[in-house]
Image (cartoon, rainbow, N blue to C red; front, side, top):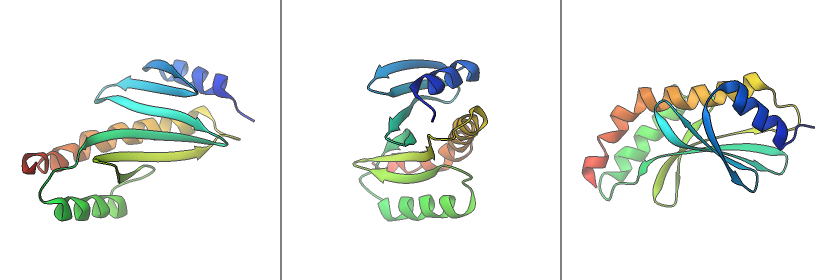
Length: 127
């Protein structure tokens, strides 16, 4: 079974700037984002990245765009809504987590932000 120490060593190996927030939560700062949270939730490693606040208008069009991106473009992570924010989330089982899996999720989230944020940011003007 992997532990928090394994996650910490993977983050060091990944070479990203990170901060131990306590309570088995790390905040990752990397090119393109500075608010990726990685947390241990029982037997699962959860990845969460806030993309933007929900706009007040054109939400239906934004939701449709997010669903289409999830169906056609996303590899590991998925877009969702949490409270008043658009988020990118993923999770992996902790038991057999290895470095390449963690790296793949972090890379996928970075690629999703760089590739899809320009289209999603157009909805911000509708706030």
